Amino acid sequence: MLEHFREQDESLSILLSMAQHKTLPHALCFTGPAGTGKAEAALILAQILNCQIPPAPPEPCPTPFFFHRCGSCRSCRKIDAGTHPDIRVIEPEGSHIKIAQIRDLCNTLLAKPLEATHRVILIKDAGRMNREAANALLKVLEEPPAGTFFILTSHQPSELLPTVLSRCQVIRFRPLAQETVIRGLMTEANLQKPQAEAVAALCQGSFATAREMVSGKGGVDAWFAQRNWIFTALPLPGRGDLSHALAFAEVLGRDKEKALRSLSLIGHYLHDLMVCRIDPKCVVNHDLMPQLEADAARFTLPRLAAMAETVRDTLVRLEGNTVLRHTLEVMALKLMQS
Image (cartoon, rainbow, N blue to C red; front, side, top):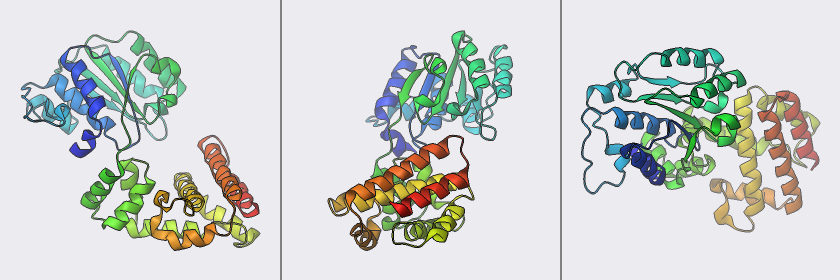
């Protein structure tokens, strides 16, 4: 995690400076891809604000933010263990953060902190608050209790209600460098470098996404097998018939989250078909170059661009309220007829 934080030095330096100069706003919104350290940074900030034995960081110190709490005092240990009564973490129950959770928080805030000098409320995936919950939180943000700091995390600021976002100072967390993800996968998931490179190229700077890709049933081998099946079975012109396209949609349509990940893979595949003849260095799935070159030779760039647009449109539809199986069937048929 320390290596991940080194890529967020600019944002973390801003946070540390505000904490040290007592100019920290009462509400912050940490935005950026999953797995870039947003929630971890929020809890470290809570430790910095409440550390009972604040240390002097070592010299030289490439990531000072990480070393401005001792980690061993009673307050730091409780925050690490998730047992500090004044450091609250709220996250979605099911698919949403519900109004009952925010009401419970509001009731807690009526009382003074039990132990902390500065109370910290971390709301993970704040973009998943339903409208009622967001409006209830807004009332608190408009008149926050003294000494209480709210930290909301979100992939994109646009996920939040504009009225909620307007009460927060946005702190952006950058996508991780591909080399950082590769090293993390080799260390934590024991992947060989070629495997780690292939996964890192597809995770868009999110270590959480990379970890999820290789930690399911069957591990990394199952993930590569699934990717290879998608690329081989993808209904393209001259590849199968109507029943093949519908069968492909049926397999993808069994689980929405898996369908979204599969569409992301398909998008990368079509990207690779467009660029492999122009600039092979830009290919994401470089371990499949022979297959990519063979498939790319069959289509013109305008046809590939039309296919990619079909996949992007399907992703947008699936992120809204739409019938999963039907939407995938429409996509499969359009791809086959492109």
